[in-house]
Length: 447
Image (cartoon, rainbow, N blue to C red; front, side, top):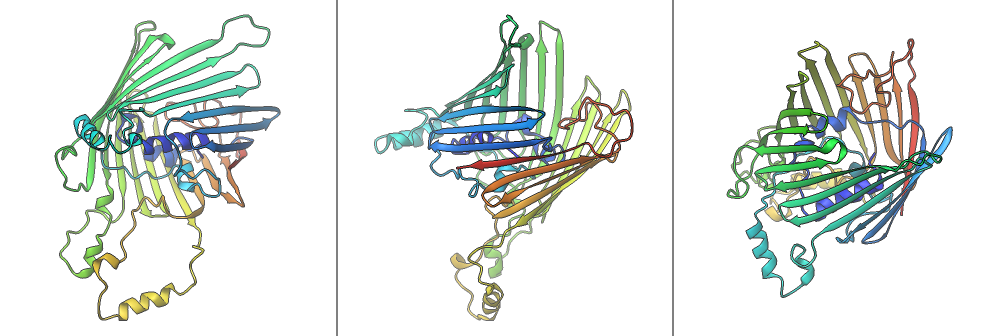
């Protein structure tokens, strides 16, 4: 489950109209959310609040032998007046990432946006964020007890197509140590036009330079208004450090259906000729290749219904012949609507008996498959690999609290191979058979 500050940062991206799907970093985000979710390892309590529309705070307290925690603050020039902040109102699908419906790339032409902003400049200065006040976000988290670690984030939208991100990580040494704090700075400049995106990175740690790019095939969203049913994207990344002579690179493909491919038009019930959707279920296919290490990975994710999704991944290394097979699913439980009086079946019957069809404007429309607006009580996620390592995660509401509970079972702890990306026991090996790897609970409350 995402913490409160991550939720606010996602709300900032939505408020500033930034498409996070149009990036090579999120090429495998759907399979990652369904297969590489982490389970709590201990008891943790999160207390958060959106004090003002511009300012948020969060406090975390955890215990496992020793007590630790963190203090977080966030400030944004963009007000979050329409963002639900109470734990009883925040959509659970916003905090528990699952199957992600890839959005249509947003056209990001500076001249078009500039013309629309200039036309409203004489009416309201608040409607011209890129001229009067460029959206900016500041975030800092201090982890306690010593040795303390400070994480800071500076994010600024330079233009509708450009975004600058500065991330700082500083760790203080032991209390009796006189060494200076270890700090590193990561700079990222993102350029997103809708048709393609580029990201340029630099880290002071070993003077690492990096680049990531993603290209969307098919119709150009900047010059075509026709609806697209699917999206094929190709991307790559490369890194180089002149200090340590470190070189890294990877490439990948993604094919995903868009919302237009699964939504049934409302006018279809009136008997009008409509083309058949290419698929009744949203799905996403990915293929990634790391040439230097010889790793090849494919994934297939399918959303069978608004409340059920499946995903599988197969990985293979051409140098060592190591392989990986992982399968997982998520099952959402929807809550009953308070306004449901139990007579919906009678209303459906009355509609079928009515000889005069209602006008098209009053016909029911099919809701998008993303389901983010649906009220949900809980979600159950299951993940199993070829070694029968099982991971279970339950997340839901208990009164006014958001609770995340998980357990890991299996004959051995997760291996430290390159396939393991988010396991609690990565890098450890058990001395013998072990079927109980750990259980944890996290409790969230926000006001």
